[in-house]
Image 1: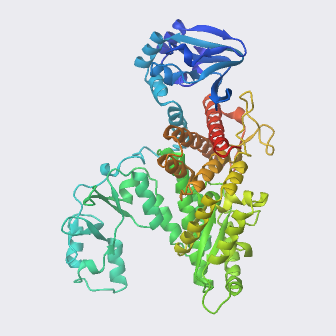
Image 2: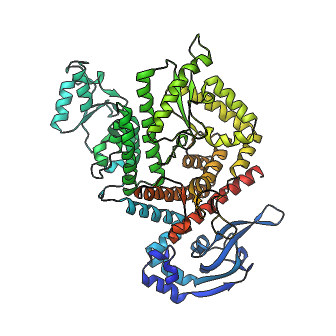
Image 3: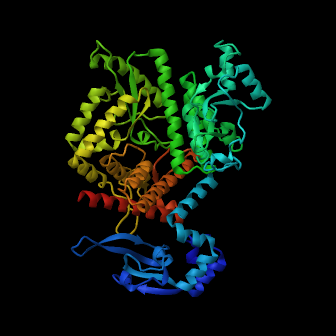
Length: 621
């Protein structure tokens, strides 16, 4: 029982259920190479927990009789859950690797635990998903910092939405619309058509602007002064999605509609965050309207506090990195706007971002990876346009550094003349990049093939991406080179299920970004580019690849969960570093982790190995 308590799911089970396991368990020894389970043995009748040593899973690879190891099971881990629950034979041969001891119980005792212990049943049915939930709960408990309780960000909007939102027709005078808002003590009114489909919205902020700027008399039909095409989400969308919309576009109301687009409710930023005291939308608006650089610099500390609060209120790692990226985007746009007010170069441009920001996967530890795509004005050469843009870009890069976005050591920045290019120059750059698969270009692939427009017209980038994706899909050699480069960064597991430490950093440290996340990011990128998937975000790429049947849905889910687990542990490490007033780092010592986290890391790295194996098989590497 003492041994079991050190490992999940047993660490969450009642003593009476652990005692039941112990009373019915036998200890079995397997010498190196012994077969523990095989497909030909028939339906599985016993449940096993590794107490010492390890078990490897073997499957035939191809028609030549060769086998490959598909998984490894180490101390404290269980098998074979899927076969036992499905009352079928195992699909994989289980073999002892080294002298191995397993605790084992008969099917009858297993069924008793399955029916009586909620934590055990949850783990058996959901596997690694239940471990992810435990990690997120752990992060939330450490992040609570007296914020108080509130509703989860996963709550459907239909639970927030007011059932009878205040509406009017487009021809109602502004004066009467405002009176209706006042009588109902609301801050907005939705303008709908005869079928109750939202056509516009009018808020108290709009009223203040209308009066202050003397834009129109109060007898004007509200349809002439409303904000058209309000943001609408269905009732099944969650609070997180609404919050991100509000933060990105600086509005404070979202219309909730049914499947036919008819209005069923309204959600305001106050509805989402008043209980939680988590003010994402207000922070985004404050950043987006700051009048000077000093304000933006000071607000970076609020971003860190907000992330802590979001974790405490149930945001998972994928949500948190999107929150950070959204606030970073708002900061970048505001720095650009402030500089345009002072020194407009007069050249139309799109500000590009690459790498983790391009994938919307930034954490609090970030540097700059950006560039400019400009439109050359008539009568001006590309060099002349670049000459006007480069001093502007240099000021922006320096001011972003003051805001906490570290200058890129590799000079992947818009102030670099090689990254301040016209659309035609970018097209030529990518043409050379794809055709000449040099080692340097393959390194660049992890940066420039994950790009996004943050400011300016997005159409030039869309046209460029169309050409780039088409070329990559037609170039099998480039894909194979990308795949070879992607598997060069192996997950940090040794042959004996230990951790392989980072070559730099402390002596016993792992780099969670380069060793843990990068294998997933780079493998997903290759498959996405080869199959025309436009999303740059790693989790979205996996979703899309499952939809087009490049990935098996179950594999995609396992890889997404493993990636999220590593990201969650990384973010918790950042939290703890901030609390200790230490510089942020992606290095952790696995000896400092509890048994659950170490097990999760091993399982997650093992999933990265499986994803890389798929890459090897696909491209015959």
